[in-house]
Image: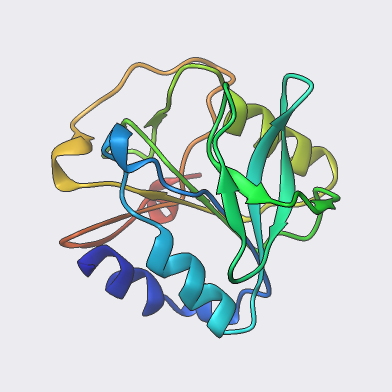
Amino acid sequence: MAIQAFMTAMPELHSAVKVHCYASMEAEREVSTTGLLEWLCSERKMVYMPYIEQERMAAARYLPGHRFTTPAIGPPGPDPVITSEESGFDVVIVPLVGADRKGSRLGYGKGWYDRFFELLAAHGVHPLRIGLAFGFQLLDALPSDPWDQPLDVVATETGIINFMNGRA
C-alpha cells in the first residue's frame, strides 16, 4: 500500500492521460497493481495493459471490472481484449525482478518491455518508465546489454527513486 501511496502522489501520474500498467502476478512476488489500476480508472485515465500476441507485447484497454486471463506466456491480461495502437502513452509502469541504482532493470528474460519501448520510440513516443519494486529488489549494480531499456523512476515502499537527473 505504501508503494501505491507514493505512486498516486506523483505529479507525472496526475497529469498523465494514457497509462500502460501491468496486472501483477502476486505468485511471482510482484508489487500488487490491483489498487493502482482502480485508482487510475477512478482518476479517468485511459488505462492499458500488456498482452502477448504473436511473440510480441501489445497494449489492451483496461476498464474497471474487467476479468483477467492468465495466458501460457506473459502477464495476466484483461478479458475481453480491446486492442490499442502503441501510441501516446504518458507513463508505462513495469514489473521487475530487480533494479539497480542507475535505473537498469532486470525483467523475466524475454525482453518484452525492451522491445515495447523500442516500438514506442520508433513512433516518437517516450513515456515516463516507472518500475515497481520492493526494497530488497534494489541492487547496487546489474549487468546490462546494449538493447536494455532503462527506467526513469522506481517506486518502492520507502519512496520514489528518480534516475533521470543522472542521465545525459
